[in-house]
Image: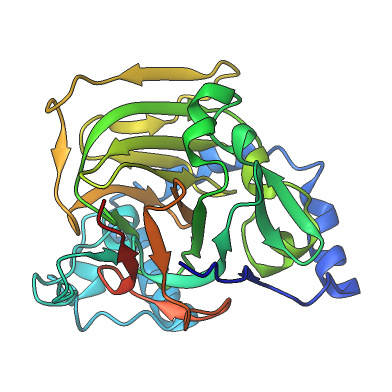
Length: 299
């Protein structure tokens, strides 16, 4: 199988990118995010309805595929933000071996892993071991494999779905900063995704292991999974780890596995020989949940 080249944001960080990014360093990321956590759960109509209307108008949110199409009908802003889509809004691919896109958003980067390095953007990469929580044994099966990074913008659907069916084997909460994960910070902040707070979910599929990493960002005051509920907050400095027995938690391809309460980034990592990512996919390309992004290679 011919290896496809990495695809990523090739523009170097501009002066504008640096000017947008530098003020983020001294900010109290977690304190700001905890305030947002409270505000987006305010149910008072005088606050909720104008805020939701402003957000829909400002970010061009398309409500036509939501189960509830009236944005002001949700009990609070967070319920609107994590809104469910109609069952037919994101159909499954016809190919049973297709790998499904985990989220609505934009491809930030994808391609092969260079040993322990994951491409972030031009002149930026980060450690796979660090991304997965610093455990070399956890990262070893994936080194030399492949990955895809999908950025969820404010207007996108914010639930994350399974790229393949699999059994959950481990979940790891890795504390960290909460830098923005927009284009300007991806190009300007070294090792961004291995520095931000994240939840690492490791699965075993029929074809082999894979990992889905939910990366937090400023104003992303909560990351949830369907099997454990809200993982963040609370804030902490210690890595937390949960192990699961085989068949204890099994999720099907395309099934919801988690969500961002406010938007961020999802990364999927595959071991060598498991995935052939679609060679037509490019950085900055828009993608949708359950859309085929590659093929699982049969053993």
